[in-house]
Length: 368
Image (cartoon, rainbow, N blue to C red; front, side, top):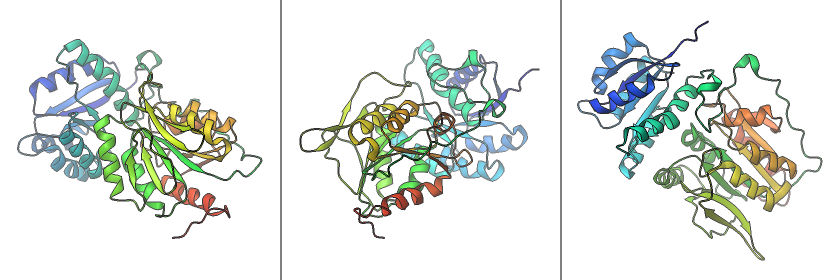
């Protein structure tokens, strides 16, 4: 039986971009171009009839730009995934965060290389897996992009068994979070749940380019009671603060004779990611052992799986976001199916659970 194709609508004012996307995406047998438009106004005139499975949307367009178009698309297609095609500049990153806040599902940076072969490779590597993941498409094994694990079809999913609670009730001394696709919105909903005097440090690996992680930290800081910072090498780790791994760098927790600090390095990508959740989680497990609390939020792929194995082996606990509240249940799904999650919770319950665990420790003072 032939598998139905994902119907894609391209909205971009550049004829060159539309042609390149059409040419590259059409080579994948799982994908088809349903139609295109050169600006938001024309897109809205077509989207009702086309009813695409996913929309690729440019930001800068004449007559009606991408930010103006998203709310109007959401009135017609409230659940259809929208991927923003943005440039890797500070202005493009700011606009991309605005788009995500307006209801876009994810973003992909436009390839800067003018070489067609390199551009094609970037689209296959960065865009195609996101299209399939956001459309919950059961990817054929031979078409899976390098480094991205295919979604698991519901019929083939094994029964999920929760990881037993550690035998001894270890006091949490750090919260470490891994997140990818859907992360900015998930973090904006989770972190404000923590009070200003939350007595633990929070460290986060979010898959994002360098400019984006800096702006993510700034935006989250305006929503949270605790300060939120992009990690700087040598930062002294302490309570009541959130650190985000800088884009294109791994972030690690390191202990010297007197202090625990954060470090960064540009070692090899893991799971094709830098920063990698696995790298961060392994370092947390090595320093904090059973006194760590790991959290895996929405994201595609399986980065974080080996890191959670290290945390569980050290006696730490792991909580993962449930499928219903995740944009993509890749990262949390892999951890859950491996039997490493002590609890699988909706996003809005995770903050409550973390605070409950911290407040239960008599040596930690937590007030609201």
